[in-house]
Image (cartoon, rainbow, N blue to C red; front, side):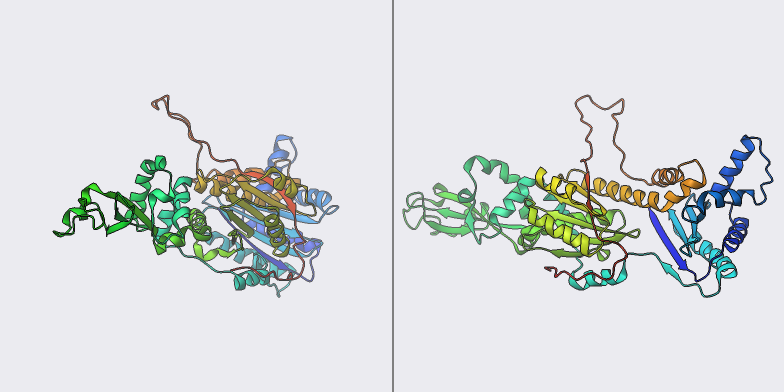
Length: 462
């Protein structure tokens, strides 16, 4: 999904000029809303020769309210182009909503701007509608970008398994220790596969040590069990008790490699995992700014289709202090959407606290599972962008009885090749279970006004 907006302010904008602008633009592009109204007239048996009556109908409806005019056109790729004229506020806005390249938007912009110069004046300064650039620069200066390697990305997917994460966390600060001293004996068999997988990926190093069966003291360190068979003559007996080494205790020792320690510390694996999910839907890692807090809470900031997003990542329990900080970021940086992704359950009291906060709406969402996280994040972004589209086109509803904003969203999102909830096919075995996507819970918090000046900058812990 792509959304692009341009806006121009004018010193003078008269009603007659607005109507002439609309007439001339309608000669280049067939307006949908006009066509709908014309269809109404035909079905009601009214004259098709509307002349200025259609414009008079719009005038009587909208000039008493906000002085808003506009219409929608569709290009050959079924993408949406629209324009909106605000008579009282003296601005003209055009937009593109679709899933394809925005080449047609450039052509549409050229036509609109040329006609606008004719009726509203020569000195038009078009601005690409984006997130406040001054605030964005402040965030950029205090944050970093992260470009994980392919190996780190693969490992982050593996570490969705909580048991594998726990294993790495327990050994990350150990230089070299017997695995039997770290984990209970009844867990060792189930850990064998994890150890082999991490060893193959150079996440951990694994050695063996021969212990004296009488004293428990280490005698010999070898890289593998087979290495014992290659021990030189005279060195295949215990130096303490004299028993053959094959009769002594062989213990496994493990330690975290530098790459293993990097991926598990400070929830780096979770950061890499979410960056990968964003990359899969077209949001490149260099478009995401990152900062962390003292308790390893990670914040990913990005502007997607003109909307600001913060993805808050937590591999630990979320506290009320964390929420205070999130709300401070929302207020200071005019954040539109927050997605809190936690590997732990989020306490209900914290959710209620956010829900009960109040001034101006911000979409605040929760995910408490990494199950199907790629699809869940994609659907979340589509939903938030759809809400933005609905807001952009909401004023057009008064031009016709049809809820045009809902139809536009449906036409765009139906064309997106995104996740579908699987239904069981006839040939699927009865014991197979259909896996549902995790629920994204939404509440609303409040933020400051969007037109305020650059906020006081918060010091971010990078």
